[in-house]
Length: 474
Ligand code: UTP
Image (cartoon, rainbow, N blue to C red; front, side, top):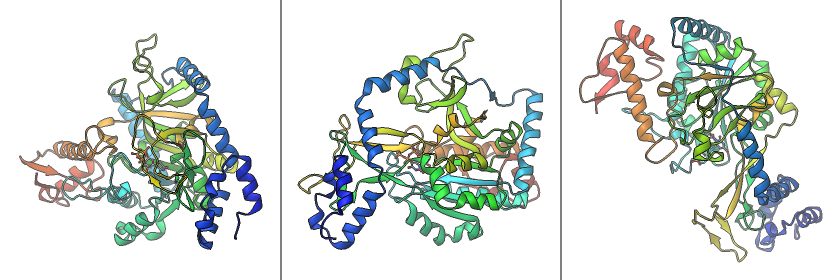
């Protein structure tokens, strides 16, 4: 391949992307092949449309403003149980979810393809040590929860882990080095999401990360649907009788994996996509919110709201934008399948970010001016599936118990706050079991020791778990 293949070159010219092959003469045969493969996987027409629409800020602003203006607090929400009747109804629904788990009708999806730039950890985020005493990793906590549920319900529970080019090899090696944390290897499947190129924010040209490689990054958690289809895992779920897909993100160590109550409500209400929400702590908290717009549920991102809009109330005095998205969902497997069969590509969102690149002279540049990022990055978001579902459901979770993500290096939503939450939850369980934490001690309960306060109580009483096994000097 001494020259760029003619049809590819024509296509690049048509969409003003010939700069991607400017270092062609420097590449060896294998590098040329690699570059051609990368370019052929890119939808140049779509990129051009996206870039053009990114230049029309006013139009975009208007439609966002309209959505915000039409938004109301979600009407159909199952709130946390307060009255004894609510508690009884939650318990009955939880039992319904448990029976689905017992019948092996549930699979778990963990999305773990993100680059975790805010945390600044040099490995896939799932390998981050978070256990307050043991330093067990996020992946280990999830693996132990899955193992504990398999044991509790005597059933299989397929675990699907979405990785990306950035996280795949290291994630798989990590699981192998840990012998899959004792899970049957055929019950854990890794599948890779796609990637999308970053564009030069000034020209719309695709950026290069090297002379023969495009600056690619994972296509967002919304890449899930096509990645599930392309990996054959949607078919596998069908063959194995999975009806409900429990979805969560890799960064929340306190998520209740395969939450039987959430699955129960999902089933009971015949929902296609159920979302766990929590009440935002303040209007300006950086969390997307679920709202109703024109009769369907959708998410408005925090960045789309001005502080005044974020704090607005409806006629009943309720905050309109209260229902924070925890990114814990239950999907109806058939709904995912329908989206995949329709070739559903969720919309692309644009983010202006700094992306390292090779400039025209072949010099590697690392832009850092946060006020004027050099690139446009593109991502799909899984919550864009919400308006595509005929029936959705919102269930309010218990924030302190279920939502303590590790996003940032320090401050809010950091490792420090997540570790403190694990410690606090375990302390509460110990208290409910009639014990108190020895002074100056930390506590950590493995999901294999107990999945909830009731199990801890019973295991402490029978001597299956000892206080000395779960506490250590802080
Ligand atoms: P975030 O939006 O928090 O992104 O992802 P991130 O990459 O982890 O972190 P930052 O923004 O770079 O700091 C939320 C969840 O979605 C997954 C992440 O792994 C995390 O579980 N995700 C995100 C993917 O699986 N793929 C993606 O392309 C993006």
